[in-house]
Length: 367
Image 1 (cartoon, one colour):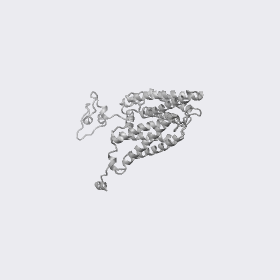
Image 2 (cartoon, one colour):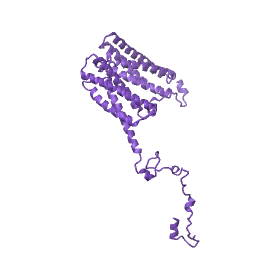
Image 3 (cartoon, helix red, strand yellow):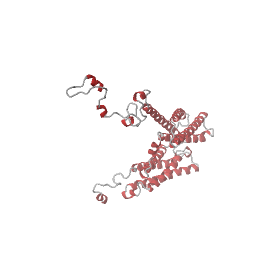
Image 4 (cartoon, helix red, strand yellow):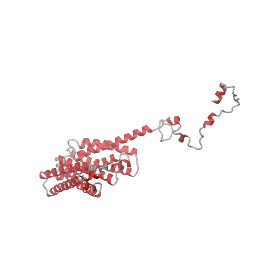
């Protein structure tokens, strides 16, 4: 009531209505944390592996999920009260809380989606606990979204905008780097788990090694291109060649790695991120084609220079240059003035008097 009286003149306080632009994201993360916590408890009860090391990792996942639920619940409740919201939103308290949660949740996702711990993924890499697997990744993505939004509103650091403005296609190459890095790690885990002890067939191990090579190659190429773009160097033709080569190899990799006898056949990290690498690489190639098409449209035709007198590169061929560009050169001849147009040329002809008019020949000479 006091707040309503204080702002009766129409000026609403900032915490009226929606508490924060990130309030719904905090609620979404809280839901993901609750589901992950319940799924982790159930998975620990019926885990495939009962070794002490696995039990410790399972307890770690449960602890991370439980701490995340508590912190997310505090953040949501604080934003429901205007007085506490003022000291939480866009302050160091929220930033420090987000950093802690990102660290906890990254460790939780890494352990929960590892087949060696018997939680969300089975012995052969297939997802056996969908709630734990999918909501762990969903919670991690929600946290990253919260962190990016906090940096943009509190510190004026727009990560997405900086990436887009720094260089074209930098966001696509970053997404490809993340996906191909996960492909490399998942293939290496599968090799250590099944192929190092000769527990899998020869074809399975060959495809697993192909996944490792593909992931390493994609990671090196993506890091190189991202580094060149960050320092301001752009090699269009080299980027086209590498992107097309990666698209072809990943199309071949998706067809074989995710086949029935491939290491990515079960729905897991290797399956999803192999497809993610192909899709992000296709996005890179599509952006390159759009840039090439736009440059072809702006390129002058062979006869445009003779027709338009050599237009400046910044003006399209079908447009004329402004007058200041045509006569801006001091050495060029100045345009004729109005008096010069009106003054008749002296070529020995007679001037008419009041009773005479111009003859056809005189009019012709003047024109």
